Image (cartoon, rainbow, N blue to C red; front, side, top):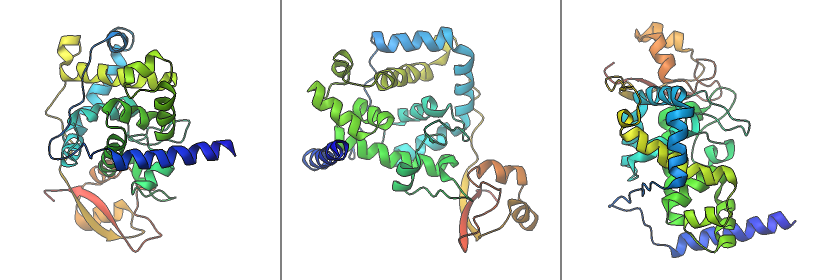
Length: 276
């Protein structure tokens, strides 16, 4: 059908762009331009006036994950500011679930999650694991940036999918995100997505300046180590055998659907506090 032909053309174009564009992410990290224009200012006003209480909760809820997420991003040579992309995706709720079946802190849909190595079945949904999901998001964002050569377009593609953004670039005949907004080449949600992200970064870098309460920076996610244990084991059993705190085991393994390791594998890696 026509859609299949369009997708085939778009996919081959994605490959061509990826092959002809230099691999822009390398040893020197490319920073995200933090423009402050009318589109961004509108979202700053929204978060600081209309949605202040909820945004404060996002800032507080994200703080424990900040170091671990930024470390994963930096290990992948990506800008640490992409931490705030997860904030606008989910407000840092590991149980976040959208009408489009996107799940977890990074709001992966099943197809993309599996493509980037996340395991999803009856027993486990690794989209809910903030560490594994951040590692997958870092790989995906890196690929998007290497295709589009622009952080604005890479984030737009994270929101709307690569094919829709390629079509918008062809339609608008530009790779400039702000020009694509002006020409109405982007879906409305995507046209808002990048300005919203930039507003969140600007506020997040100096919350006090924008009238938000101090964030408790002493709170952080525990340093974790992956430990292989047998399949089909309840976290309660692991707690009894090892002496590890059950509440902690559940908190750092939110992706285990029944608080037990999958029954369909002989062994599975769970997270445990490093010092244990």
